[in-house]
Length: 110
Length: 113
Image 1 (tube, each protein chain N blue to C red):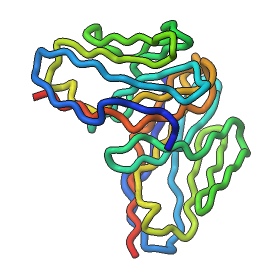
Image 2 (cartoon, rainbow over the protein chains, first blue to last red; image 1 turned 135 degrees about the horizontal axis):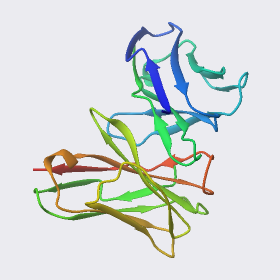
Image 3 (cartoon, rainbow over the protein chains, first blue to last red; image 1 turned 90 degrees about the vertical axis):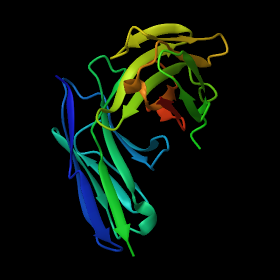
Image 4 (tube, chains in turn blue, cyan; image 1 turned 180 degrees about the horizontal axis):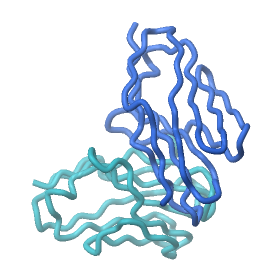
């Protein structure tokens, strides 16, 4: 069964304290791994798509990496405005639906 | 702003009632997806439409149905509502029918009392 597991469930950081979020997946033939950011009561906001092991994408303080079994979202020198829930998802075997993890809720304090 | 619009933003109704949620995809996108997000289940795929036709089904209850119209907007109909149907309902759209990035709308928060 296709599955996505994110850890930790919650992460508290001080402003400027870098860290990483993990997303491990089991799927038959990866057809894309996606990172989204979600603020409370809002829709998921697209961040990155990764398709093959070794691929990396960067945007401001965020960098996403992909291996054959997991992906990491590295946050460098976070700011309070980076506080949100970060969701990881993969396409199902049909390449249609997104299968989401439960997310990591990040809180950054100044 | 993803370019995907959803109405209404909030909906409060009673058990046994029927409601309709509306979604307009990004300009040029042919696929529309519906997802349900509850506190205990996370984001769950319900159904996909591509250019007016149903393409894939997920964990969608028989009480729920959807359609996509010629102008590509989509509606999700929820009937015989139960307390457990209270959730956030999101629409997403993509250019084609698979393996591309899906862009999500702001959601409709449904509360069934």
